[in-house]
Length: 223
Image (cartoon, rainbow, N blue to C red; front, side, top):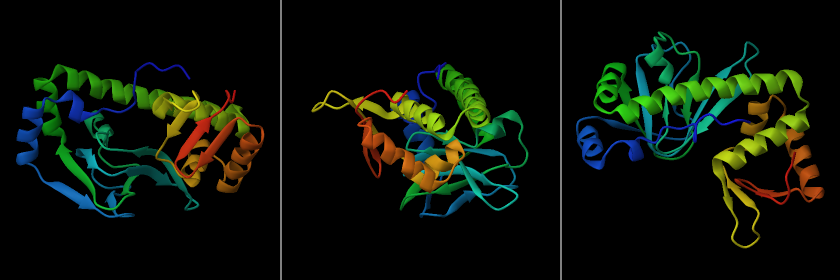
C-alpha cells in the first residue's frame, strides 16, 4: 500500500507545544470511560472531535443484520470524529472504549477551528488525517472486492508492519505490537475470526510469522 502520509494518526501531544496543551487541558473536561462504554453512538448529533489521552477506542458500525464492523482501533494521541469538521450532522459510526480508565477529551468544532487558525502544523495534519483515512478506506474496499481472504490478510499484515513494526534486536526481523484482536482483524478485512485464526496458523506453519495475542513477529515477507 502506497503511504501518502507518514502516519494515519494525528498526535496532538507532539504537534501542540507543551505550554499550549497544558493551558488547553486546564480549561476542558477529560472524560473517563470503562471497557465497552460508548463515547458516541450512530445517529448521535455530530458537533465534536475527540482526543485520546489514555487507553484505546474502537470505531465501527453495525450492519442491517446487527453484525459489528470495526473500522479502526485508536490509541493515545489519536483524534477521531473528524467528519464533524466536514459538516457531518449525524454520526454514521460508533466510538467505544476498549481499556479500563480510557481518558478522552471532547473538542467542539468551533474550538478545533480556533486551534487550526493558531497552529498551521496542526491544521495541515488534520487535513492529511482526513485524506489518509479516506484513501485507506478506499484501499480496503478494493481488497474486499477483488482479493481472496489470504491475500487480504497478508496485505493487512503489511499495513501493520508499516504502522507498528520495529526491528527485533534479537532476530533482526520485524516485530509488530498492535492493538487489534483477531475479531477486529477479521472485521477489518471482511471475514470471520475462525478463518483469520486458520490462516495465521498456516502462515506460522510456513515459518512466515510467529504471533501471540498482541504481537506478531514477521520471519519472512508474507507477500
